[in-house]
Image 1 (cartoon, one colour):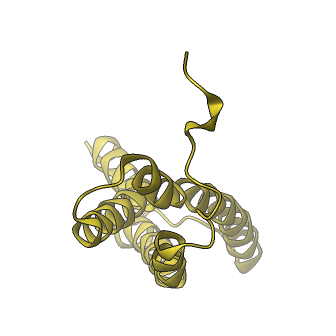
Image 2 (cartoon, rainbow, N blue to C red):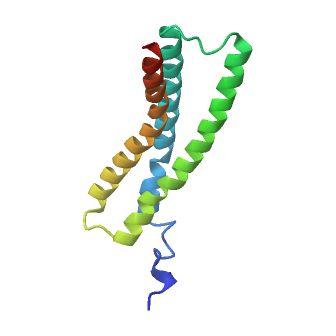
Image 3 (cartoon, helix red, strand yellow):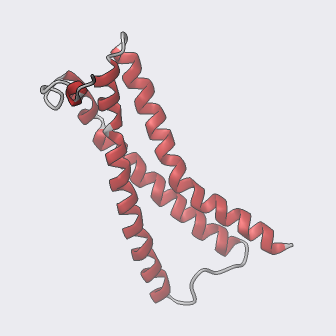
Length: 133
């Protein structure tokens, strides 16, 4: 019979694993924030560059920026919940080479998280190309 006690040990949140992951969380969040702003800028530039202005005046731009910014903060919150998978999986799997696992898992998680905001300008580009024909 399996037990619900198969979760990581009680020192999970105070051990070396947790410390390593927490030491990189700020870098993760700053990279996500920069990626989000870059993708937002790319989406706006695509619209204006291809002659499809997004907003008629500054009020529309401000409103949409605040709306998208709020949505992105929620997405970053969800990304931070998923960030916990790194130390959780490490605690459950207990890889032989923990350092290698950490570096690879962090890189894959970071790049995977950056794909989410990048889809917005890519979809917009596809839509603009489709409507231009």
